[in-house]
Image 1 (cartoon, rainbow, N blue to C red):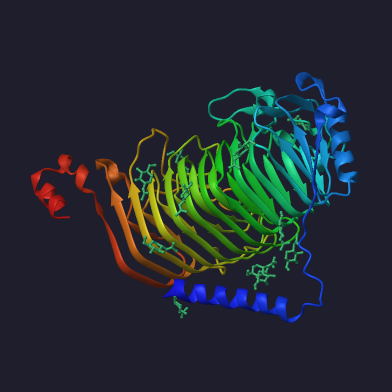
Image 2 (image 1 turned 90 degrees about the vertical axis):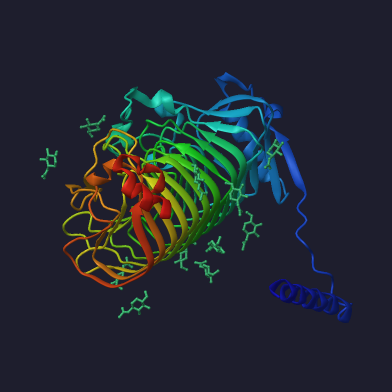
Length: 486
Ligand SMILES: *[C@@H]1O[C@H](CO)[C@@H](O)[C@H](O)[C@H]1NC(C)=O
Ligand SMILES: *[C@@H]1O[C@H](CO)[C@@H](O)[C@H](O)[C@H]1NC(C)=O
Ligand SMILES: *[C@@H]1O[C@H](CO)[C@@H](O)[C@H](O)[C@H]1NC(C)=O
Ligand SMILES: *[C@@H]1O[C@H](CO)[C@@H](O)[C@H](O)[C@H]1NC(C)=O
Ligand SMILES: *[C@@H]1O[C@H](CO)[C@@H](O)[C@H](O)[C@H]1NC(C)=O
Ligand SMILES: *[C@@H]1O[C@H](CO)[C@@H](O)[C@H](O)[C@H]1NC(C)=O
Ligand SMILES: *[C@@H]1O[C@H](CO)[C@@H](O)[C@H](O)[C@H]1NC(C)=O
Ligand SMILES: *[C@@H]1O[C@H](CO)[C@@H](O)[C@H](O)[C@H]1NC(C)=O
Ligand SMILES: *[C@@H]1O[C@H](CO)[C@@H](O)[C@H](O)[C@H]1NC(C)=O
Ligand SMILES: *[C@@H]1O[C@H](CO)[C@@H](O)[C@H](O)[C@H]1NC(C)=O
Ligand SMILES: *[C@@H]1O[C@H](CO)[C@@H](O)[C@H](O)[C@H]1NC(C)=O
């Protein structure tokens, strides 16, 4: 039915096009943008590609020459080789085409980067349109060179805070940045070992990130996968992200963020797989996350709203999650789903969170779901539909901590529960299954743990909680029988 209708609409559409063409033969045909793609090789501009000599000027000259051509698109091609470089500035109409076997290697010295800390990237595009990176090759930030002391719990990183523009160990260069750009495409490229954030999209409009593979050291803090900040109309698809810190992380610092879609991705992180926040000064609206696999992560789907920005119309669907504990130095406490808003500091106000749906979610985790609004700012209209939660412990890290970080109440002692709920107005739970698969389930509190606060307008439909079949042996035959029935 739908297909037929669609076919009809398409037919109608093409008919109209044909008619409009044939009925107005005098008007000149619509000129399709047929960009002559020009290609320039960095080798022709003197790049060594030996990984030893800096190729910065050769590459930058190629980019500049490329942007000076009249072609709509100009590719800067990197043949196989290793290209050591200081910051490169990408220009409008230029695509970096890093071929398979080619690697851009970011410099590790402060003087490799511009004086302003906000421009510390290995590759950055500022105020550009129609820019991108592709080719099947790699950009490597040499993140391990920024480790001051290796620590399995969390590495201690060097800090370039001499400028005073940033503090502590968050003073390191990012890998790739698109700042105030339009029509950005990053596809078929590997981004590895960022010293700090990996792919940063700031105040951009119309961005597509596809077939990108991100790899960062698992013990390094702040090596986020993709940070999308103050940007509209962003599509992320078929990405593979394996890193220490947050994997896909929308933020609002100076402006709102609308329309972000992330689909068909695989994620592993020692922090949150998907995290809204914690920078959350402006609105987030219209975000969709679909068909995502999350493994081995510290937290699955997270809204960590702390600065007064309001969040609405967020959908998570068809997601398979596995979350576990790591050292509590990392934010995250093995929660598969985490929805929180609270004022980061005393004088801040809490942003609102409304219309958030979780549909077709399967999770296996060491801790439960945490849903927490703030006094006077309840979470509004949350929906859980077709959600399958399996709870079991498999690491030896301590549990019994509720994580409000950053700010707010920080870490609070409280025993784990299937779902902790506080300050909620409107919650629909439909076809939700919670299972405990170990005898240490006795360490857990109730399936639903309502905290002293206002929780209002809840609907439970086909909600079930119980122990699983396979783990009844320790309880003896009687319950084993129940298990068989169940
Ligand atoms: C990625 O680029 C490589 C090398 O150019 C090419 O062989 C491959 O088909 C591309 N893959 C995708 C998914 O575009
Ligand atoms: C950063 O700089 C401040 C002074 O601005 C200094 O007190 C602090 O020790 C520095 N931190 C690191 C990690 O270098
Ligand atoms: C978005 O950007 C892509 C290229 O990155 C371009 O092909 C497309 O036309 C742009 N869409 C809009 C609405 O500008
Ligand atoms: C995103 O959309 C909002 C609302 O239209 C607008 O205020 C903001 O400037 C847009 N941001 C960008 C980067 O285009
Ligand atoms: C977000 O998407 C909606 C629906 O496609 C569209 O109407 C709206 O203009 C978009 N918002 C921005 C800021 O582009
Ligand atoms: C879901 O994403 C995976 C890649 O992670 C892809 O192989 C699969 O085809 C996608 N499924 C659907 C229904 O799009
Ligand atoms: C969030 O919503 C509240 C209530 O509607 C409003 O007062 C506040 O200004 C909004 N915050 C932002 C940052 O837009
Ligand atoms: C989720 O992933 C695990 C492995 O990570 C797999 O065993 C399980 O079958 C998956 N569940 C669904 C519903 O796809
Ligand atoms: C959820 O799963 C069901 C059954 O597989 C499917 O029919 C439905 O379209 C899915 N919902 C969403 C929002 O993907
Ligand atoms: C939380 O629990 C830990 C370990 O059980 C204990 O040392 C600490 O004092 C507790 N904190 C509070 C605030 O009760
Ligand atoms: C209760 O929740 C339902 C579903 O979220 C919503 O449609 C309804 O308006 C809510 N009622 C009140 C009184 O808030």
